[in-house]
Length: 129
Image (cartoon, rainbow, N blue to C red; front, side, top):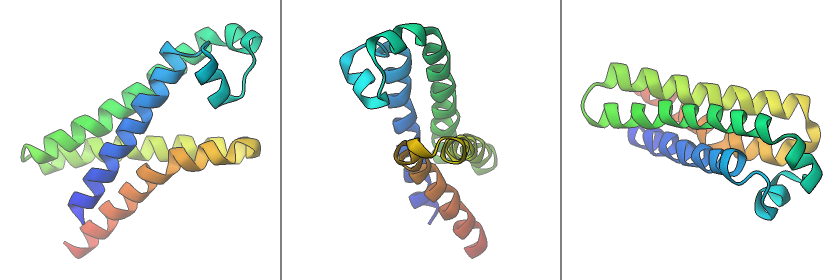
């Protein structure tokens, strides 16, 4: 079950790297605007905010990704701490989006799926010992 959790955490990290790219690098492009449902004017007005928010997503991805690598390298305590911090923060942020912006339910659930399942798998792995 631990391997399933780590694969899900790595997948969550990749999703958040993708979100970073959309928010910080491609925010004003037609692709990113279509993804987030913004007009060219809205994207231009929110560019700095999106750039900053993208880095939050990148830092969460780094936490989870480095955690997976550290577990694979043999230090379970440090690695799992990083994985839980990264995926827990991802899941919490997705829940905030879900609860505060019902119109963005689909995006919130996509952001919640992999980290939420990773946390569940980690809990099951801990219970099974």
